[in-house]
Length: 276
Image 1 (tube, rainbow, N blue to C red):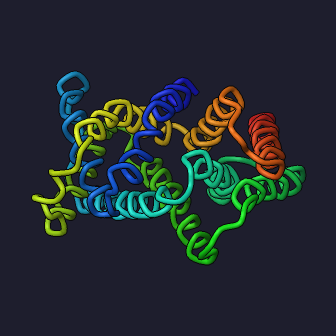
Image 2 (cartoon, rainbow, N blue to C red):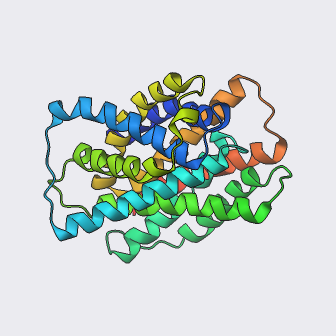
C-alpha cells in the first residue's frame, strides 16, 4: 500500500503535465510518446546507480519486454488522443474500472475468493464512471468510447504483465528498457526541426521527474499486488475531485453524482475484497 500511495502522490504531481504536453504543446501521439519516454529514460538513468541493474535477457523476458513496450505505446497514443478533448480527471475516472478487472483476474488465477456483493458493487461503479464520462454532450462518441477502453486495457495488461515478471527483476531496469524501446520506435516519425521549435518543451520534459518516480513505485506495487496497482488511479481521481471542489470548478450534477458513486464504491469494493 505504501508504494501505491507514493505513486498517487507522484502521479498527481505529473498528471497536469500530460495535459500540458498534449493540449498546450500540441504534441501528436508520436511526439507525446517520444517526449514522455525520452525524458523518463533520462530521469530513470539517474535513479539506476542507486537501485542497481537486475534484468536477465532470456526469450521469456524478451517476450515480456516486447509486450510491455507495445502496451506502453498503446497507453501513450490513446491518452495523447483523449487528453486533447477530455480532462485528466475524466481519464482517471475511466481507470477506476480496472479495480473490477483486477479482481476478476485475481479470481481466475485463484488468488482471491468470490463474494456476492461484488456484482452490485461492480454495477454501481460502472454507473458512476458512466455518469462522469457521459455527463456532458460530446461529439464522435464511438471514437471516444473505443479510445477510452483501449486506454484502460493497455494500463490493465501492462500491470498484469509486470505482476507476472520474476520476483528478482528490478522495476527500474524494466522501465528503462521499456521507455528506451518506445523512444527508438518513435524516432522515425519525429520531425525534429518542427518538434524542437515548440515553446515550453523543457517544462514538459521536467514534468517527467515525478512521473519517473511514479512509474518506479507503480511497478513495485504491480509486482506485489495487482489490485493495489489498480487502486492508484481511483485514489488519483479522489485527489483531482477534491482539487476541483476546492477551486469551485463547475463539475455538473451528473458528474458530481458519478464522482461520489465511483469513490464510495471503490472504497467499499476494496474493503470487501480484503475482508474476504
